[in-house]
Length: 325
Image (cartoon, rainbow, N blue to C red; front, side):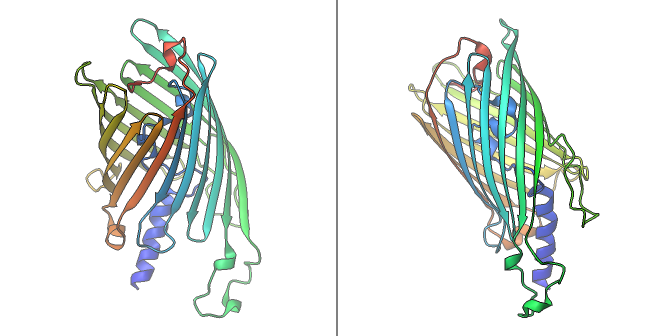
């Protein structure tokens, strides 16, 4: 009975936040890589930026979700940026892979007050597969499987994301709409939603200390909503960075995620930390599950490694990052 309850919890929570022809977003964007959230951040900064993430969810539970992803973005010309992201997401007998190619253009709204506007678009292609070779009837008799399951189930979906980003000195506000087109549905399952549109709002402020202290404080909020069933969640985040005279730095932070109809019943909360030394970047995030599933696992772990290189300063301040560079 306990296994049955856990299975239902996994199905409910995973269907809400994992494989839905979307790139799962946990705290990867907090590893100084907001390009994870929106294409509008592509090309902001002076480097070719590469980030690789490894995520293991609900450690201790068999066949729990596991995700690997790679992001790269860089500036082209003075006011534009391009980027690409690849990911592989496995969850039990299901697997999803995807590629996203992005373009962003950055504009100056007001030069003296440092107000900038960025517009971005991404083309996505996702593939979803169910590995029926690993199915088991639970009786040890293969013939007991559903006779309708005769071959692998897989499908692909093409879609687009669009976004807009406003920046004013240390303040930023990003609004992104993912999967703006309806999805192809499985004609054998009338319960499958064809609306995978989702909305993300990411906003925060980078408070910078004086030249002597060389520290930054960054509170931020990340909101996401899914059109199919109107569910939504919010992350409340806080980060602290300390720089040395060579602009190397370390950072620490914390994130708190909750469903918006259950603000004081968090899904997860956890510390995070990282550092940047010369061109190398490393970040780690731990998230403790605080709902019913938390009793059966030791949390979710996210590791990020990255490289920043090919530095080339732009003539346009609209591509400067709010984070000290």
